[in-house]
Length: 122
View (cartoon, rainbow, N blue to C red):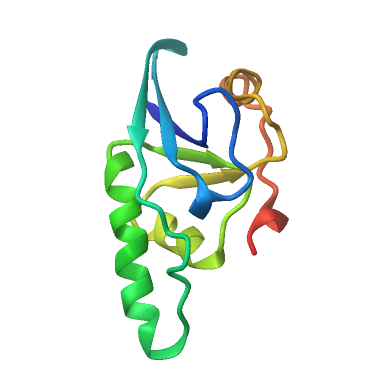
């Protein structure tokens, strides 16, 4: 299993999916971490559109998610409704959290104790 964390520095979870610069992808095998990899993330800042431009926004969200297409879970501090919908459409489970430290959130996730705070979708 691969878990993507939205981050700016590889150690903390970014509060906003769209503004984050990278993903930290953690590979889990038999319940244990076996690898970590930083991946670049396309910036979505300034790409929020409504109405006829929704198709463009959906494509842009798809572009941002290409780097984590092999992941099953994405953990972020918050995200817009558009990317939240897109994650579901491509089969990536989104978990929103107020936790800051990736290591702590990872341990809670592996223990089945990391709750999803849906109110962090804006």
